[in-house]
Image 1 (tube, helix red, strand yellow):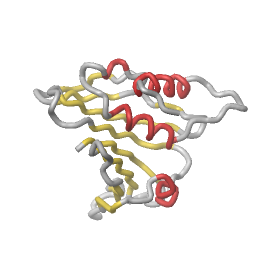
Image 2: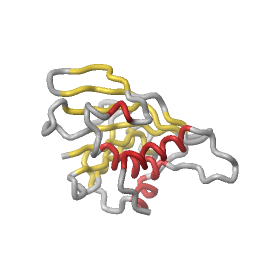
Image 3: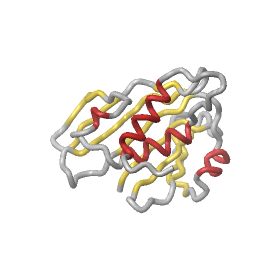
Image 4: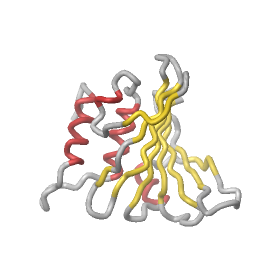
Length: 168
């Protein structure tokens, strides 16, 4: 289904995510969230970020960029998306939007990710200094030059830890 107003679609999806689902209702997934948020991030600016249903809060700024955070989003009883970090340029032609978040819940493997994003490139490896260092895999840039990076902590290398959506 094509929706001409992506922001309205984004709002509708997050409204759905925010309410408790009935037993016979399809539960939203990480993949729905990534698809919807990556489309919306392309449209986000410092002028419209407060329209987001995630209720981003300005936490820091410098002359070029505003930094935002949002509360955790529960997909169901066992899965949630948290530690949102959104960075938006104050200049219309400045740095493209950057959004990262952590995944908590069912272990999502690299194989699971490749079912949705088959063309991943290894873009980061741990240096052996900490179990929190990440191995990262990134999608090719789309037509708008946006990439999605999936990262796995060295201490738990088989399960997704963080996702970064970045414009180029």
